[in-house]
Image (tube, rainbow, N blue to C red; front, side, top):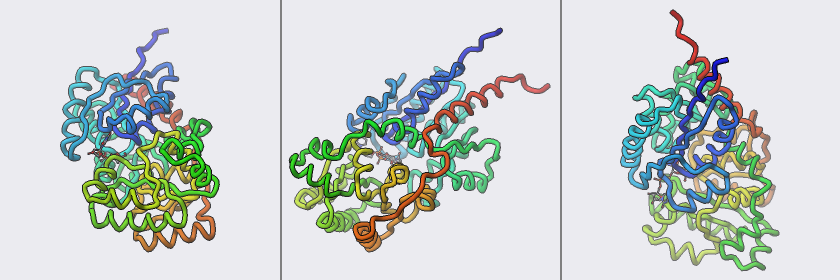
Amino acid sequence: MLELEPRTIACVVGARPNFVKIAPIIRAISARKGLVARLIHTGQHYDVAMNAVFFDELGIPLPDVNLEVGSGTGTEQTARIMLGMESELSNKTPDLLLVVGDVNSTVASALVAAKLRIPIAHVEAGLRSKDRSMPEEINRLITDRLSDLLFTTEHSAVDNLIGEGVSPGRIVFVGNVMIDTLHACLHRAAPARETLTEIGVAPAIAEDVASRGFALVTLHRPSNVDDPDKLALLLEALARIAQKIPLVFPLHPRTGSMIESADLGGFLRSSPIIVAPPLSYLRAIGLMREARFVVTDSGGVQEETTALGTPCLTVRNSTERPITIEQGTNLLVATLDELNAAVDDILDNGGKKGRIPPLWDGRAAERIAEEIDAFLAHERLPLPA
Ligand code: UD1
């Protein structure tokens, strides 16, 4: 029988949440005889703490190529990724380009592949915050518009895509690859006590904080950190919450630099908040699992807390992941009054209970690889005369 050449799937990563999503996909693609993965890193995130640590912990193979685009405005980043991608995809044309999530690397790569007529698969398609002031929302809309295969994590995403006129035959509800990674790694998650000691908390205090209970804070969205006045009010509110329960606050580099340029570093360091550098994946999920609650504006953390059953307060007006509210442990807090009330409610009553959404079962990446295989096999058939 004729042996067919394996098909190459170019998988793109750029920013921290991409690494968490791509790990199980690379494994599932590599496990299929007819597919090989080629990993392209755009270099959007480059700090060791935002990048290399994740490759190590998640067992992601070293990228086949790194475009090293670095930081800049959204437009600069997108343009640099497009230039790098154009030469990469022209020199080594894959059978399909796979992009994940909603970061600048996602949309820039999809734009180039679409112009080169390379089929595109988008993992985490169809999520919509309906808020175009978020750069991610623009990235989601464009990426989905250009994609041939749209893999979704929740039913709202399917509804959104159908509402936008996407042909239902191109949409596949596969579940959530971020939860695949959580399932695969949870047994290796670092205990909170150990992480607290690692970030410089004295061992006796770390022991006390871990056993009495603490909350985790992650914030980096422009809507929360870019306006100095708003950021000051948010930090003051967090400092007051930290008098009720210890707060652990790992700083995203963007948040760290906004705090310094707004001259709020002194305030934060003199507050009771336990400030930490960006944490590795195993440390972050360990803290999320043990925390009494999490305060966040991240997309992925809303999903991970739902999967872990930890109450989550999302400091935003909207979420593109409504299943975490309908079925999970997530609650939107649009104002500081709402945040304070929600924290008091959790401390008094334990917080929101949830259930695990459909297909968040640790096997989403296998379904994706299977669908890609079938899609490419179909494309291989001779065209009808
Ligand atoms: C990006 C994504 C966001 C995602 C987040 C997770 C977009 C539009 N946004 O936001 O959806 O939730 O990643 O982390 O793609 N920086 C460093 N070192 C790094 C990376 C960034 O110091 O390794 C600093 C730079 O000052 C940079 C700033 O952080 O200007 C912002 O980085 P950028 O990649 O533009 O966006 P994020 O805010 O990280």
